[in-house]
Length: 146
View 1 (tube, helix red, strand yellow):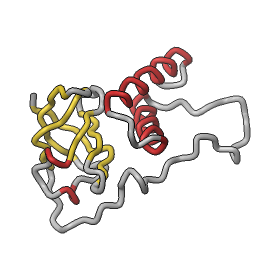
View 2 (tube, rainbow, N blue to C red; view 1 turned 45 degrees about the vertical axis):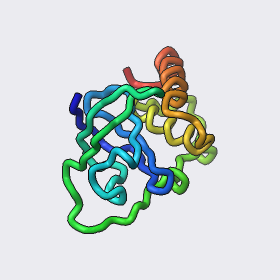
View 3 (cartoon, rainbow, N blue to C red; view 1 turned 30 degrees about the vertical axis):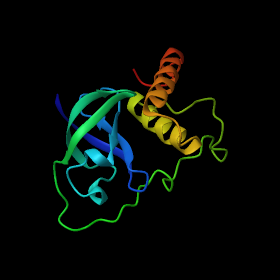
């Protein structure tokens, strides 16, 4: 099925990343072998078109094409290894008894970045199962917007 979405992350060195489908479905694994444009163009936020497949480890994108091809060569600045993560605990913020409430999508992106930074050997299927479990817990506690 042909779908559209935005690149969440793509690591040129490792040759993989993830796409957030516009449909709101679970993030989709992307691999360099499935890119139709030069891999340096696939950066976070770029809009793409792809075919959704079910791989051995979960949802997988194939025939990934940029919807808006950049005019000049871009250098990648968003590899998984060098991506800055927000601190898990912000100790400088005064404790007023409240907490930030994220959207479900924001939580999913935070979890993706944290899991990849913690253990780059996790598979897409493992990350999706972990995220789904954590998002369910967060919803149950009201930690994310409905």
